Amino acid sequence: MKLATSIVLLASTLFSEVIAATAGCGKTPSKVKAGTNTLTVNGKSRQWILTLPANYNNTYPYRLIYGVHWRDGTFTDVANGGQIRPYYGVPELANNTAIFISPNGLNKGWANTGGEDITLFREINKAVDAELCINEKLRFSIGWSYGGAMSYSIACTLGQDFRGVAAFSGGPVSGCAGGTDPVAYFGQHGISDSVLSITLGRQLRDTFVRNNGCTAQSPQEPSRGSGKHILTKYAGCKADKPVWWTAFDGDHTPIPSGSGTNKDTTFTGPGVWDFIKQFE
Ligand SMILES: *[C@@H]1O[C@H](CO)[C@@H](O)[C@H](O)[C@H]1NC(C)=O
Ligand SMILES: *[C@@H]1O[C@H](CO)[C@@H](O)[C@H](O)[C@H]1NC(C)=O
Image (cartoon, rainbow, N blue to C red; front, side, top):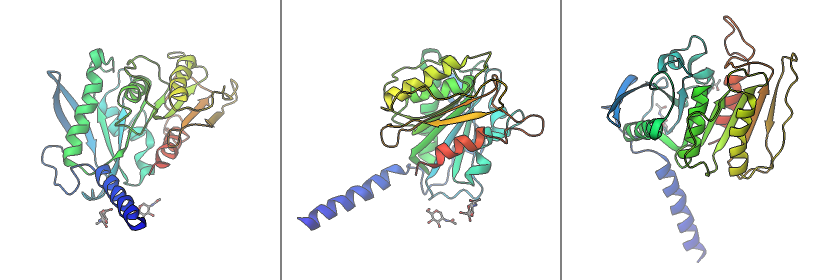
């Protein structure tokens, strides 16, 4: 019996490792390519940028991280950087362990009308899973403002497909269909946000405090003029479903205490990378 049990355990371990890697492992991509790709979704032509790690290895199951742009921003703003570091500063920390994708919103935003943007993410996942080697338990979406709202919407609706999301200065403006699955959640918000008030950021966070079974609390937030940020890691959450919350002294910005050439060198990129890298 002991041997049989071991064999069952071994088989299920092997099986779960096999299914965590996408069908694209071992393949040479022929349809998806580094740079701009196009898909037709609900009859509309949609674009997205694929950024592969250096020396892409088609047998290594990579993390997949979506970087989602803000209102009036575009996919190139996230992929190439400028106002922010590329993909909110994560690739320079991920050390080639992740594939990044920056999709383009309709009308420079993420209204997600009738769920069409959620469908876009589903379709991109399908396209890349078929041709690239991805660990399907390690998909994430991160974004600022409208991009944070869209990442929240993804957590609400695609919690089976995404391991975690990060919303910087987000609000519930891309909808939340479903909204009951536990999903690892990272929220960051300025205490003086004049566009999407921090009350909205707390609301998004609290959806996942509930869903993830964390112990409710009112995390400490920095005072105005302190120039500080405070990271709170919720206690009591279900295994693998953490909720992290960073409140900072500032307004509606993805670059809380950098400016000019000192772009996002402070805590946005390192904070979200610390959050993502805890999942293996
Ligand atoms: C590619 O990834 C596989 C699986 O992790 C690893 O065994 C192999 O050494 C890697 N190849 C290179 C050239 O790094
Ligand atoms: C980046 O990855 C390479 C290859 O796995 C490793 O040798 C190197 O130490 C890593 N660098 C950092 C800063 O983690």
